[in-house]
View 1 (cartoon, rainbow, N blue to C red):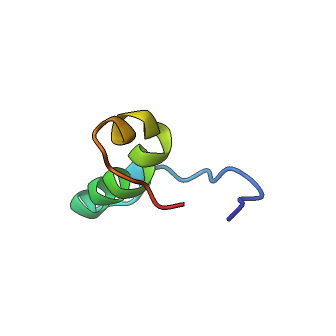
View 2: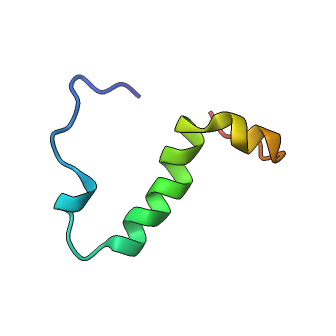
Length: 47
């Protein structure tokens, strides 16, 4: 999946969904930004 342009919205713009935002960050963002940490723990990431 490719994004044509960077979204201007931020997580803080989404009100009342703090738990869901945290789960999204843990499940999607962290594995993409810190792949080596997950690999070191033996967690195999989906492509």
